[in-house]
Length: 88
Image (cartoon, rainbow, N blue to C red; front, side, top):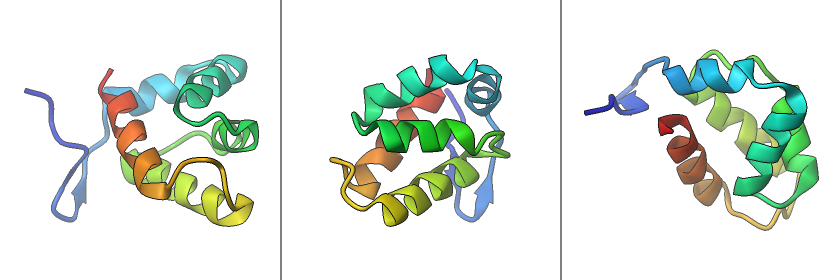
């Protein structure tokens, strides 16, 4: 059974974070585009690597949505999809 991305207030690093950090930037943009068709968000997410942990990944997404405005997905939808991406 995989560990949760977070357990109360403690964040666990995952293999998914290490995998995202290792992707070539263009491939990572493609992966992020599968979650959100807004290229600005996908490029922005790829450009702020490396991520320390899942919490930092989710916070980066939230900050980008705040800065960009409407990206076609809510913060909560993106958080859920990013969590699933980390589990692959």
